Structure formats: structure tokens, C-alpha cells
Image (tube, rainbow, N blue to C red):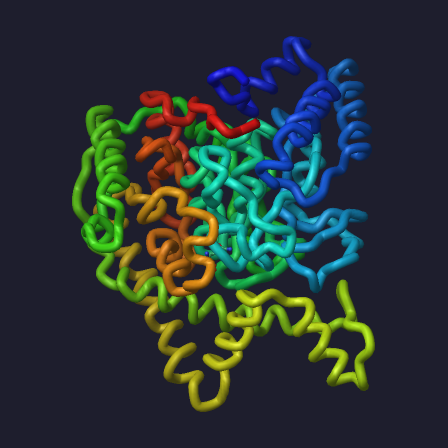
Length: 488
Ligand code: GLN
């Protein structure tokens, strides 16, 4: 491979000049999967023939001058919790064995309408519950910077597919960090939009008040291009926002002078954080400061409750959402059962993995009579306090800068038997979901050969400022142009 990863922008230019065809791009992507997937395991399904046919159609459109969008003819991948008509959807779970979706998610349909070519589906933690992709029935995805390590999760397959140069962009979902954390671990950009910015229709629900579809790519510019294609109101999702969608690409190429960046005091304490990660993030903030941004300390005083609050809310909602997998309507039904109750019990016992079961049990517990007030009600109250923390902080700054994760990619197996340690790795990302605000992670340095993510958080509906800052940073730095050594 070359030292610069192919971006969506560079591939679009190559298509525009006729240097390459969409069909050739798709063949390249499929060849990259064939070369890499035994080692990386980013994909759980490929649409080889479908993608080839779509690419030929895109090439025909181009010869007729009917190019639909900047994504037309570009190969992309989607996370395996986004449904596409006629395709298997597994969500990393045994319980969805054999489930072929009868419809297409709005975000996926919008990519198709823009002419993008969907080459396949990427690996993930079961029902997006996890931070490492190890909770996938298909086995873990590996980090292209070091295959003994996790790419992060739960959108680890999407992050690896982009980082390894298989596709220039992918869709993921982020309930508590599942786009930003794997983007950080894999040295790419990942954007979680404002809650409601992208329709959740056709996203398999994990925790409905937190789930949001977003994008992964090498650059903030490419994130803007992808988000423009998928954002916008959808009457089929009652939480989808009716607000008009700005042209996110217009935020690109701007400068940061005069913009105020807030550094939350509570995120820069040394406890439980790799000091080298903090140094990388501080150095990144200095780059923006030298480019004219003003930096000031802000406070998010309820941060210490964020992980506990997130896991209470997420598990409660998950226990309710996952009640629909009963062996009757979707996917896999146990064999040899004795009556209806036994069929439910066996189908669910055999179909769900240990992390999903843990969450269903805990979520049911916190919603149960007698405990509801102490846990779930309390968590909702603290959620309000966390949201107010951000409202207060954004009175004094335009964006907040933090590490994406307290450490770089950890080893596969390191936290799998210690759920609490796994949960604590989400300490910097979960608050944005609880508050519904947008966040982006971009590569900002390397520690011992592994990428570090800089997270930028913004006001609700202000993805544009995040993209402007992230794009300005990337024009001043070259971390995002490095190619992982173990990508083939
Ligand atoms: N790691 C978090 C969890 O396990 C977040 C997952 C996600 O964003 N889907 O819940």
C-alpha cells in the first residue's frame, strides 16, 4: 500500500477524471478483503455480486453524466446492525441466525440513493454491547496496528475496514462510544451525530434513547460527506429531528481563530488514564491553540457518575428492547422444547451470549418494582444533571476537547472477564450519548506505536463546528495519513 490511505475524496477525484472505474474500486475492495480478512476479520458478510452489479450501474450513470452525489460509485461498508433488504443481519448474535431483512434502514437507503456501493457487513459486539468486538458470535476483529489487540467496539469491524484500506468509509452505531472509541483505537475519524440527526429506522435497537447511527472515515471531510448523505428527518423514526440539515461540507476549509475550546477539568485527571494519552491530547490542543483557538478550562462536575448512569439506562432499555427475540418472530428457535415457555427459555438461553444475558438480567432488575426508584429513576435524574453540565459548559466554549479513551487499544482477552474494567474504558464517551450531543474522534498522535484519539464534543445540532475544528486540525497534522503496518 501507499503511505496515504485512499480517502473518499481521492477516490471520487479518481472516478471523476476517469483514472479508475467504480467496478475497479469494488474489485480492489473485495481483493483487500480476501488478502486481509483471515487476519483482521472485519467482515461478517460480503455482497460480492450485488456490489459488482451496483458498480456497473454506477459506471453507466457516470458515462451518461448522471452522477448522483460525491458518493456515487464509492465502495462502503455497513455495520451488521443496519438492515438491508434481502441481506442477512446478525448483530453478532446467534439468535438472529438465518434472519434475512425484509426492509432497508433509512440511512442505508440514503447511501444507496446517493449511489454508494455497499460491499458488505462488518463485525460487531453482540447487539452492540461491548467495547472490543470480542462479544461477537463470529469471534473478535483485530486491530490492524497490532493484531494482538482489539480494534475497539462495538463498531470494530467498520473501524478496521476503514483503517486497513478496504473501504474509505463505513457506517457504525454509537450508544456509548461505539463509533468514537474504535475510531480512536484504529487511527481514523469517527463521528456520532446529535441524537435524532440520523434516522434510527432499521437500526437494530440496543438502548433507544442513546443509539445513534454515525460515520467512520479517514478524514473529517469524508465524515462530512457521509453525514450529508444520511442525515435528515424521517417520519418513520419518531425521535428523528425535523430540523433542516446544514451542508456539513461547507464547514470544511475554515479556520479556528477565535473559537473557544473547553478542556473539562474532570477529564484531565491522571487517575486511571495513560499519562502519554493525556500528553498527546494536550499536544493536539496546543496545535489548535497555535492556529488561533482560545483554550479555557470548563467543568463537567457530574462526570464521575457518567459510567454508572449510562450502564443503568442502557441495560434497562436493552432488557426491554431485547424482549422481542423470543424464538417466535425473528431468527433462531431452539429445538426439542416442551411447550411455549420452554421454547422461549431455550431459544433465549441458547441464542444470547453472556454479555447480552448479563445486561438483560441487570436491566430487568433495575426496572423491577422496588428497585426502579433506587436505580432507574435515579439514573434518569443524574442524566439530566449531566446534560445540564454540558449546557453550562457550552455557555463558555464552542467545543470541548477530551481524550476519546483513557488508553490506547488494549489486548484481546485483557478485559473480557472483567466487565467493570471493560465498562470503565467508556468513561469519556458515554456522556455525549446521555446528553444527546454530537462527538467526533480524530487521530491525534501515537503512543508506543498505537493511535490516540482526540474527542471533540459540540452543542446539540452543531456537528458543523466539530467538523470545522477536526478538519482544521487534520490540515495541520499528518496522523491520519499513516497506514497501519499489519493491514495486509
Ligand atoms: N461500550 C459501550 C457498551 O458496551 C457502548 C457500546 C455502544 O456504543 N454501542 O454499552
